[in-house]
Length: 255
Length: 273
Figure 1: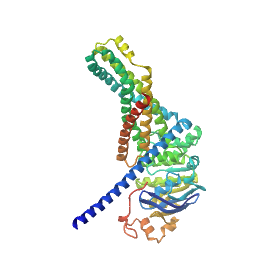
Figure 2: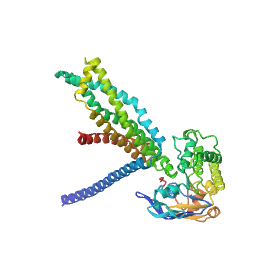
Figure 3: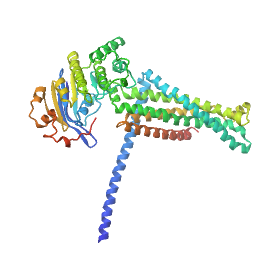
Figure 4: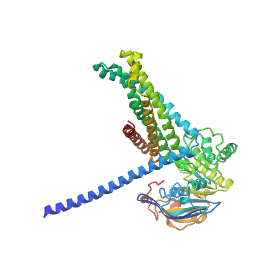
């Protein structure tokens, strides 16, 4: 289980997380929604120790992430797959080498590496792309390879950072289907950050809205769809006018 | 009265300016200290991983190839012409004293002690240092470095150590080549344009050229390689922004690398001469 407890994080004068608390139950997919630049990705990066909180804790399976030493962090990261917003594939490596890199770090035998590459590429419908370089792939294909790289590690947790941003609706739906398939086949706990409500409704068991650095509301998909909270309603309906003036929002991206 | 108030306003204004300047000075000092701290940590981590944990031989071989093999042609061309110019310039001055016999010694000494290591280092700082910063910088801003971390790799061990080791090991090799090319081109110039025979060239070379001159140049070139790669890598890991950010970071890394070469050159001159 991943537990955020009263997390604060600032970058210089910009306060991003201000008392962010959230529980991510095992075996479910929790989706964090919120306006662009409100710190969703920042929250996600705390889980794998890419960022340390200014105050508060992020707890994964009873371990406080920012208190782990290097060995502890390596052990923790081997249980977590991270799918980056723009896939973050290594340009100089082929698809096969991209997937192999994490497996080699876990000292998986070569025969099993080959098997896992085959399985993970099949899961994302990208068989036959082993020897292609990221530059030869479209945005959607790269995201699929990013997912394949994460699931090849057979992680306990899968974190997705804006998995459908910048994709056309059909490719977005394909990525959503892959995320659902990954959860069903692998039984992983998922944490997804997105502002794409279609995606949130498709992949999420629970939805939490991040607003002004803290969780505004959390609940099942049905509870969120029926919410009377004006801020959450405005966001899920995508209305420019409402409780929050969309024109006045700070949309400066924080990553 | 009017003048008095004017003065007071001016005084307040200058006090405010002083405070702002002091704050800026403090912030800059903090940034410099933070940078030096980061450099020290990376330096110690690089040494640690080099000695204790370095296992990624394929990365090292790749970097050795990039730093060494790919630099050969440009270094060859530049030192070829440097040797020719050195011989001709030395002859211009020494002919006035009928001391042409010292031309070989001047060419060889200049090439091995100074021009070979420093010129080669400056060329490679531009070529290899910039390439390292741009490559790692792009990886940083496109989250590839973060991806490495999430795959449980340490970027220092994976990205920095092979580059720093490769530069430290390959610089002396490339510098040795540059020295040889410079001396040979100086010899060919002396024989063909300056009426010196090969026997006279070798004799002149032996007059005041010692073995320690060779290792002096090679030794300091190792420190140049280490500094260029370390600066390039740390700059790359701290790159921010998009293409413009990476471009600016690369430019700063090259300038800083060139400065480091000249400072280290002066340092070794003071310590070793």
